[in-house]
Length: 177
Image (tube, rainbow, N blue to C red; front, side, top):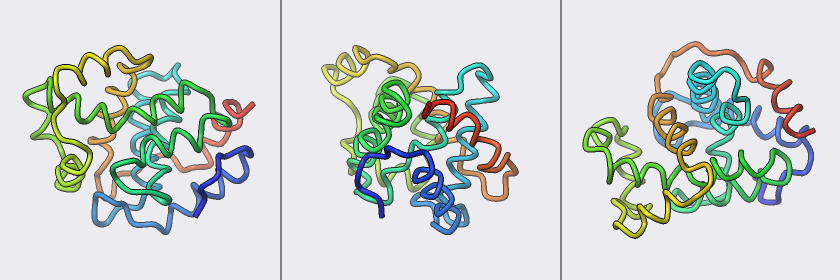
């Protein structure tokens, strides 16, 4: 378990590699690494020029190993910000709020949630109030967090083939500078 901010890319990579043995919190038959790779792949296909968004997809659930479903997004952002930058951290930190936002503002989104996401939604606060919607929309990169959230729901396919973690290492290293 890693609960200190990542300051070294090698430690982050080792943490991600360990995900290959960790079952997904939300989908039986999927590992956390599978889920992160699917999410990154989805975002990279949508916006090939946006490495930060794809990397945010790869690492968005990094907080699952250290915290509860309610705070894993914010805790993950705190772990990543110093290494991968403020935009990646902000997108990661907002991805749970983006779920709450989408179930509030998009009448069709709730039906897309996996059973695990439905359960965690309750713990994470459920639908947003109008004030919470306005506060969310006032955040930098909120639209990117919504894009990540949509990719997050789509990235829960058991057996889906994606590029491996090694294919993402150059982008991770580039962001870590």
